[in-house]
Image (cartoon, rainbow, N blue to C red; front, side, top):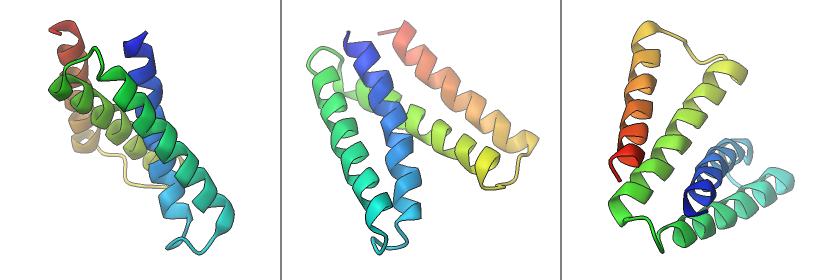
Length: 104
């Protein structure tokens, strides 16, 4: 259960990161509300998961999911550059996340 919550919390990290950019400095109410809700749920999920998952593993997996999700969103929705080097780096992050789960 903790791993599922951690994965959802990692996805919510992507949501709040995307919403944060959309707030335009917290000047737009709806994206600001989405940011705040996703941030609270993401942090709450991380805290719950770390009851049973070690700190280093839980935090690294959470950040890795959020980083990869945010980078992919930027590439797919915002027109960020898609290069072999960038995709290779994302694969390395995913490999680390999977490795931490497997070696847990």
